[in-house]
Image (cartoon, rainbow, N blue to C red; front, side):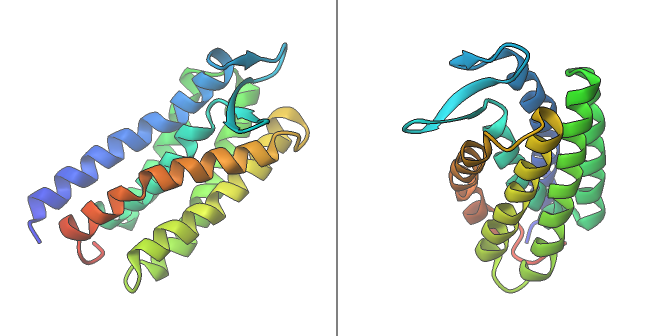
Length: 182
């Protein structure tokens, strides 16, 4: 389709993606309905289930990375992963940046590995399956490294699933703007 339209959508997704991880790290330390002393700020993600507040932006990041790859190519997708990770250092303490960065890189690479082969045949399936795999990896690694346990795992997964479901309408637009992989 229109290359300039594809490039514009990809560029917007790239910039939005770059903001997701630093925003998640900032939210975890500053915004929530409850802030645990020496721990994360939490938000409700389901009745009786709480999660660190950055959860929603990370779920969106998984979908945005897919959009970047679809519109700008796999190299841009990998560049976005590296740049998003590096930007976290500007908004969070080193221990949180390490936990977030490690989880982010591993989850995005898992997302990338699943999304890349599936996108040519079934775009919606590729986005959903790759995002679900990525959000589980991200949750397990981040919670283990940042907080030394998996107490918030159900909330992390539920919150990220909500974010992925919210971002799915982007896939409809993506089919029109970038009907075949870049």
